[in-house]
Image (cartoon, rainbow, N blue to C red):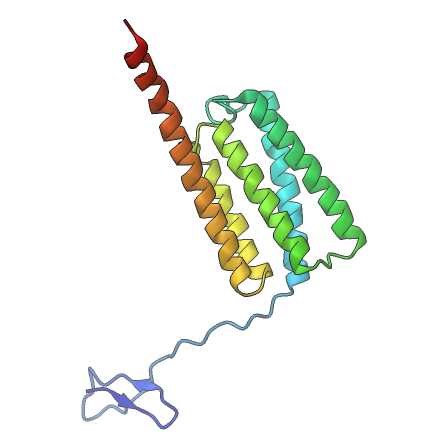
Length: 185
């Protein structure tokens, strides 16, 4: 039997002896949204810039040749270079405006980031490369910085991008095999 106090707190009466008093259970209290979105945008912009530089340096130094740019090295290099330059420019612009940005500008930044990460993922061999996991950070940051349904739309676009890349890879891997077997004599 569940018992509640007047304030609605659930009481734990499962192991209640006659000698014991009823103690209220600890209830879940959600954390308040005490973060400043501009501080989050500042940290996230530093993260994006650092990530672009690290990916570019790792590719150029050949640290992970089996993971970065495995399928299309030129596409990976150009995408990571463009992504890094874009992030540096974004960092400078946001730094000059004290990291104040509109919802349209933020959505555009996240949309470009999702596109760049999907290109990097495609150039590295698709979803098995693990680069697609970087989209989780973009979707989470978008969920915290964007308002309302646009944050869900951003996450849906990221999911559709990964699914589309996987379908494209699946079709492009099977179509040449069908064409070779059809036209072989």
